Amino acid sequence: MAIQVVTAAGGSSKALSNSVRTRYTDIYEENFFYKRLYDQFASAPQAKPMAELSHGSSVQFQFLSNMEPGTSTISEVNDITPQALVDATASLTPTSRGEALQASEQLFLQNFTQYPDQWSAILGENAAESVDLLAMQAATQGSVVKRSAARASLNAGTTADRLSETSFMQAAAMFQEFKPPAFVSPDGSVERMAAVMSPMAYHDFREEASSSVVQVGLYQQAGIILNWELGEYGPFRIMVSPWAKVFGSAGADNASVIATTLTTAVSRLATTFTAASSVNFDAYLPGWITIGTEETSDQPGTDYVDNERLWLSAFTTASTAAGNVVIGSGPNGGMRHGHDSAVAIRNADSVHAVVLGGPESLAKIYAAELGEFGQIVGPKMDGLVDQFISLGFKWHGAYGRIAENRLMRLEVSSSEDA
Image (cartoon, rainbow, N blue to C red):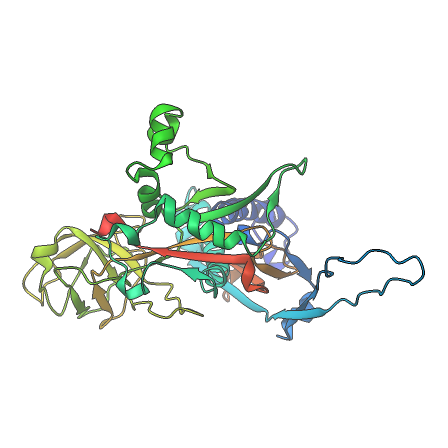
């Protein structure tokens, strides 16, 4: 009897491993491509052999200087003096990322219609987030930064600290002074750069009273106001994403300060937590809090990838009760990340990073054998009787700033925290 299987266990010749793998790969790549954000600042990635990257040695990028502009006339009797170019190098050190899921055969038998699709989609999303975090860290830790006050002093209640038409164009003008590479239209007639920002920073920019954006929206292009169709401003494409970098509760303290810690660990999808103190919860409720370590470092910064902002919607005065209710970005409306006990809980104003850049603002290398987006591994059968099924991904490469003048970061508060 010919029985079709996923893998050719026991020498079976009826395996459909190629078909199954293609299905997983399609779903993985679809979710990976959709979740990219800061990767777009590196539109000319370089493929390197796996053997070169696996040694962990740095990969060099070469630069040649411009020529000095000519200021002399051509002599009729003496030859001109040729110029000599100057070179410089920058390097990236490769790293790797890889995660996997494993399930029992029984789970697949009971959930065969949806679980395989779900976990390959979740894996693709995780791969994109894991890899794009490297691009985000490179993009948001540069030396060219502009803000109206120190990060810890940026206040949601201070208009000058928010993203406005004036602050954006001041930063844009400063950035253009560096003459960074830009996106060029197919016919070469238009140059554009990109500005990545969070929805809350965009809200302040779009809604600033008496700005030209509002005036044009009111009297010429209603879509700017009604449909949020700003699209671009000056030479910048406006890219609004909830995945844009936010330094949660890293700004000025709230008038009703919450500064406490978790007394017990919480898991992903949790909707409640227990705090060491409930001081000011009642005065602040409802509002945004951040669970995680405050990101105070600047150049280069330190990212805590499991920090998350949550909406505090209910609380309890009993410190031993898990009656503090939050709403987050997890699939069930709860927490997206798990958090250990003693992790900080704060309600200071958050700081939003608006990143300006172009197609060559970041350098990117990747292993040619695994591809730019990594490689899906599996599905694989394991165990003495093939009772386990696993699916994973692996990626080798690096992102980095090879020239500090190709990226700029504008740090602002948000009126949403006021």
